[in-house]
Length: 336
Image 1 (cartoon, rainbow, N blue to C red):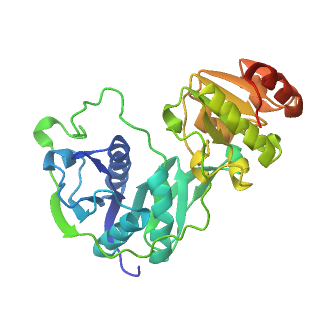
Image 2: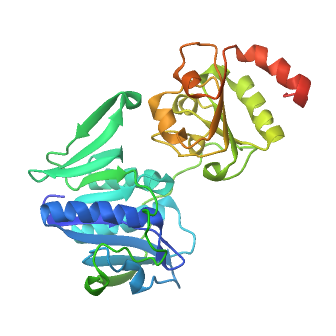
Image 3: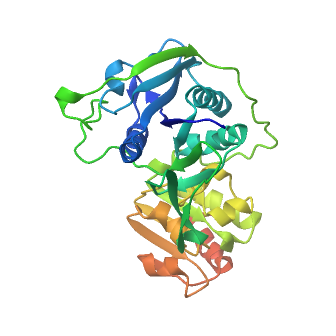
């Protein structure tokens, strides 16, 4: 974009007529930046063709305008990306923010590519300095903190790691940024969903035996590179079925193809808080633990006595997994 407006565009999600907790948090981030730089805050969202969010759901966020695109009840990432791209072209914002959740991580790169701008993923904080958005995110597994700016391309675009409902916030769908007497309601512009920019092609399907919600699982088994390959992963999958556990993985294991990306735990993956986390061949990097910090108890198996995960575990087993499998099979039955 050559010419831009002094505006911040945030992508919002609605569930049953109310903003999701993640969207409310993202709106707070956008509102803080808007105050720093005296920007307008604009929202964009997509809803089902017969579902228009109540104006009350959008009040109190300091949004000056909201673009609402009417699509199908269940939309694809490509459809949502097309809607956000349309909103970006209508508003020409200096800054564009998307939540760093599963949906946001999938659609944001599509939009950035079409806009010809950069994208900083998984930002933990944002601030404005001399008109530039300083985008802060961990790097090198969390060992360093990087501050990234986009000097020329516009909009300055980032996905942001935001949490859900703030402590004490009422379950009304209205965020109390202002006092009740000062709540501002945005102008709403409703339009049909734009044409899809192009769906992704499915090249391969890899079924997961344990099909559940990783974030809500009571027991999680995390697969690391120490599993050694497909044979170890297959045993971990059967073990998860026997224990009624959900199966996750480190980023390195996902990169090697051990499990699909939607099973990744960590800073650039999913956050979990199980009662019990069992790690198999996981070193316990800062990035991984950023997503697993909510685990109440950890049982860690690793053949490296210096692996960081062992210092965090309630029970740490320093041994090769090849020695562990026979012990488990004696108690639980075959794992092949």
